[in-house]
Image (cartoon, rainbow, N blue to C red; front, top):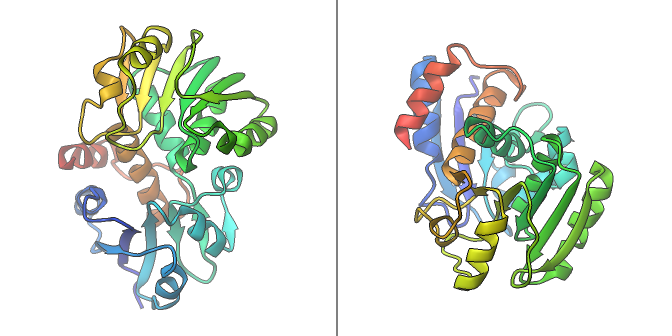
Length: 270
């Protein structure tokens, strides 16, 4: 039986660009794989996963399913283990869970010539913030400031920072800011901050990576200073490239055949 079926699951899911990205890649690779989408709630995840038959190769997971997918995986890659979040499941005799968001952030920054940062400010304290912190550590960050509407939610990020060797301090979204090399915004799309806060963050925030991409520019990006601004579309693209590597040969670090051509086709599909 050929494992040729894949999909992205989440709730909501109608907005997802993943089917376009993956389908474009599979055409270039000459793979007769089917990639769809399904609206699945956190409560229904286990039931839906258990109903899949042997024709299924893997799943992409978006909110609110990343923690559910982590619990469902029999083994995890390092990024999933660190963050407690899985956005990719490779199905088979053993279900393997991966977090390609970390690599997607790193690749998107590198594409914008942001390959290193010693000090980082992370806006938001949700699941994507954990991936942002791991990505920051991997490009050399030693200190990170987490700004959140509810700073108490950042306790897990403080603990993660200890594992990574990064000093993490938490504070409210609105307040005095110090200069940093890089800002990673993980706030929900459409979030609007007070004008003075946006201006202060932009003047002292270095380069900006904003995980949001619809609408674009985000309110934060529109009010940024002179630093480089990177939209979440870069992360979306590059995390999907790593997912396809996993679905193709089981390893997010091994490049695809003619990967430059694959990535160009995916970029055109955005």
